[in-house]
Length: 253
Image (cartoon, rainbow, N blue to C red; front, side, top):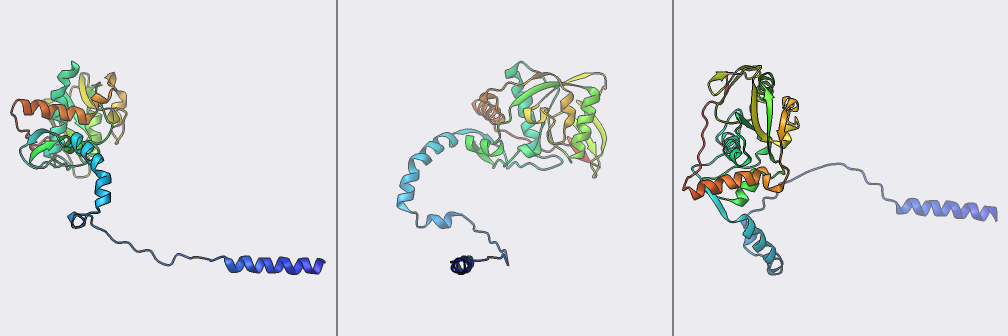
């Protein structure tokens, strides 16, 4: 009986081994599949019918025109038209919060797309500012403002509002900093508007952690994309085509 059990166990082991396939990765390759209008030539009727009500809903939200820009705008370091426009928008819209900030900061990492010349839809705004970041206001001493500008220099530039004048080196050192034509007073207090993500000290801008008198509304209506949308709509009502340009806010020497 024992001999029979031993033979049975051995046979079972051989069967299990025979049923197991041992795979070994030998190569990895990849390719890029471009999804463009080529696939629109022969659309799947059932798929199109299924998507139709969803597309209509999305288009009704994303499609409305909220404003217009004078030319193509994209973000790049150390300074660009789009990275100038967004902090300028925050300065302008601060009136809706009873605030009068001295300057604004908007991070390059938060700018995820560009504006093309012409009409701007809400969908375009959402592409540029897709995150849940909200506008906020805070106070920094002049000493901390200098630290903040040094941290911006180290990152090679971020979006700063009109009136900020930074000279930085290629290796990210701050050479000089002025605000509205004046040197930064270390003992003075400066009101700043930015997004709550940066106010928490993220993206290397840790000087924001020393802020006081924080005004950070958390309702969805205060999301950056809504602030930007509302600005465009206000300009459109006034018949203004939104424009921005590079003007030497951050200069590398």
